Image 1 (cartoon, helix red, strand yellow):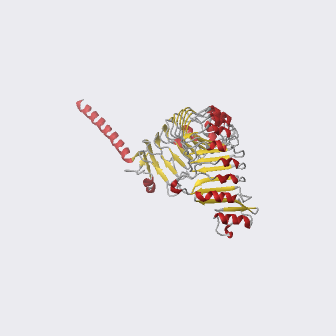
Image 2: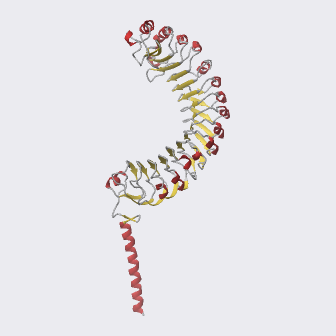
Image 3: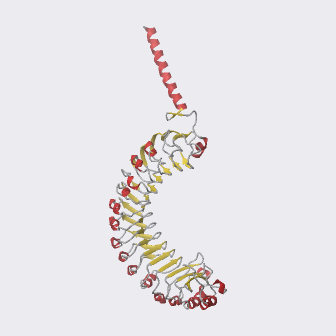
Length: 470
């Protein structure tokens, strides 16, 4: 909101009388307290004792251009205060933010007059102590399109009356102690573009009624106790760009049909109990930028990653992935690749094929990779972070120099060493004994040569003894 003109003296006098300002010169100059547009005070930020808030709001009703209010209270003894009845006089409000001015709960209840806010479009309630009955009041607001409630501590289920709020386009109920199952009535909110229920205690499955939310572009159900299979009906959300079901208890396979979400760019199913292979179709979504499936029980990598070559991040860590990681060579454009704590095996050379391109962060630690790494990672790569530790069958030497981009690395519990002293320390990759030869230390080679010499001498001695006997 811009400050384009000075408010009329009458409006400034209102602010003076309520204590919002202490001088006329503050009327439209204090950005944190009030803003002016077209000669009227348009937005006010007011805080203080809830006992004086009622009279202040009554006075604000005399401000004809007021469309926004941010009210923060300091409840006495930390006890939440009811929203004053006079809030209903501010019928021009389009935006309202109610919260405490400290860490204690701010407001505790909405008055009946709240339904007079017929022009209210966006409501944000942060760190309050409302009961779920407030949804009955809010459902009567004819223009409400955006509702955000966070840190409210309802300790109750989402009421069925939520289904009556059909003007909503954005609904966020975050970290507010909502429990029980998601009501079927939520599927009636056909106009929703964004739904965020993060950080509650919701349980049960995603209701079938969600099939009515086909306009969603963002769905976030993270950090709850939701369970059961991931419904394939999500594939019908053709506009979905972000889906986050992380930190739940979902089981079963990832539906391959989700690949039909052509606008998907963020896909986070981490920290669940999903099983089976990662579908090939999921990594063929053209606009996918982040694919996070960490901490599940997934068993196999996709055969080809070329469909998401321009992604920022893939994280498949802490799964049960096994077999060859040869498909990683098609990850040439991905910036961050995390496949640690799995059972992947095979030659590390497959991973080298993705290094000369865009990858900056590579974590392949705690797997069963094997083979000679000599010459695998060089200064030609743009890696800033490289973790290959705890692959005990890796060996060889790296030839990083001071010109490399590498700033963090770990080669511990491998047989890989770094030729440069800086990287011996940085990567825990000290070359012990003589330099590496063909993937084995010089000491090992010498021992092998000594053993062969011993065998030869033994054979010669045997031959000599045989000749003497003859």
